[in-house]
Image: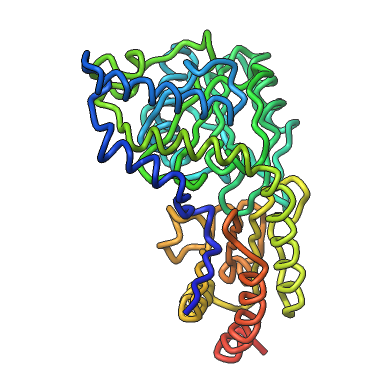
Length: 384
């Protein structure tokens, strides 16, 4: 059976070129970058080369603004904790109701530590209002943390303008750009973003490697304290194979971004056009301001989990929301924040297309999914 993988927002296939890069540093160049000998020195050079590639993909001014981490969650935790430590005396945080659990759950923990957290709403399209942000700001806000692109709907947030507003009040600005990197242009040269989180496995790199951008001049406190690695900003022997692989993945992502913007978007639009022919269906977050490959679509009076299981039997991989929360039976917190009716929210699917998807993949989804929806509605006690 041919597998159609349409869950790229959860994780991506590791590119062959990235596998080759990673293998080199597992089997040939396996030295410790902290060692004085040549084997270690060559590895250290590879780390700096990867840092340059990640910085280029993000439009960072200098490679030294990049710190390698274990992934997006560590980067988010590091950024938020560091920002609060550098703004002592300020006890407020502003975020949104639709953030990734890596941010939302940390904010809930911080509330228990005495911080006040303001969760900004989104409209029915998943869009954030800058007026709401400005209304929430005051001189006690330490940090504004807003995602660049939503992992469930693909909706983009105006992070540059949000960062500018945060700076007007002396607050720091962090963005989780895990879903945006490599899919839409990121340009950090404007200086309104202080801290930015990314992850390797969203750009056809391996799992277990990520990066944190820290703007030059931004005060920083390490989250993991140890040795001198990463210029004293993240202790622990470096994951060299992962770092080298992420650097190669970032290089490829930058080269393929035009394809993402045109070909993948066309695939997404074709998929949506076909699926919306199914009665009582809707696209959540249908706006031009979203990722080119992401589609969140709901079918009334159908269980999303049943849809996923039956699609899986047909060799189609999708998700019902964030890969970090789709193991629960609760409706997506993102769709609830958007005001999606309960009867639709429970029947939501997320298709996220990427570099390796083809027209044949879309054709197969459009062939297999409509009869599955029809069959499940026939079995549903809520239909008819």
